[in-house]
Length: 387
Image (tube, rainbow, N blue to C red; front, side):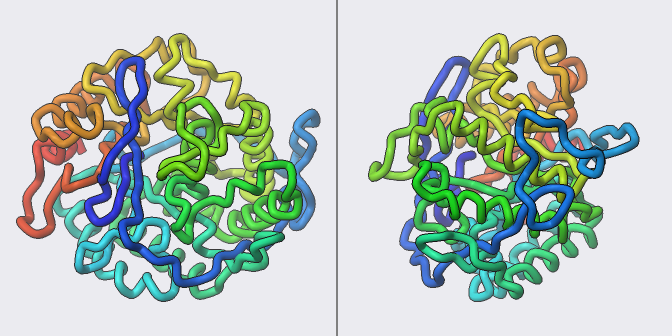
């Protein structure tokens, strides 16, 4: 995802083929004021228990039961991200913190009012950054959830619900290390088993409370895990400038997202879960779905490409799929209104033939609309013309 301080678009990284998955996020002066945490919980049919072994089938109580379909209220929408403050300052995955929420809540209200009044789709993808809701122990990780932060999240969901909007909610994200909502990737280094287990307990507790929310159409368990945790995206290791990746092996990442999925499935059996992708399903032709085996109910594919050239998804993907982030090559073409609008128009016009459930245009740097002028950009007009 292309995200950054204030404008949400301070830079990008590049990789091909077919385009650029731009996404750099700088905190630009944001100071982490509060200690972070996690509250431990288990993940399966019984609260507090570990997830079932990957080699064993999920218990019946963790299965969705009757057949279901991924129903979305519109074929277009926005990759909204998080609200800024009322002054336009970017806070990223700190937006639900008790000392930040009062500054962003009015802006969220303004954004949602504008989105609805200008017909910018009924599906909005938002970033939670679960770590920001936690009380955190530096050595062992998750201690408990901050009850005020949890209430803030419920209030945010209620605001989307009041506007008749559905949300695709991103739970974990690893992009800006100084942000309160950034995933602590040392949990997966093999030296912090308590921290890893604590994350699963936290996920279980969170989804037992919120997993069946009627406002949430689906949950993204980890934003672009193979990119931000693994080697697939070609990101440098720390202490390089963000975005970085610990460059864990595919096995480590796959084991982690599979544990997340099995934990989530038992906490909220009827919910839809995915782990979004920017490396395996568009960059590779044919797509490599093996790295998501046992870890997703549907695919969320991110594409930043000025000349779209999708693989044969209808033949290769055997689960529902949507495009959770869409834009032109970042930054030059993405920031060119005509070029970006043309790319989004291409995906929208081909969505039905490709079997794409929804196309969510990336919202950054005023690429969709301006509250100040009350106008839509060329890309915004594309979305509004379909929604």
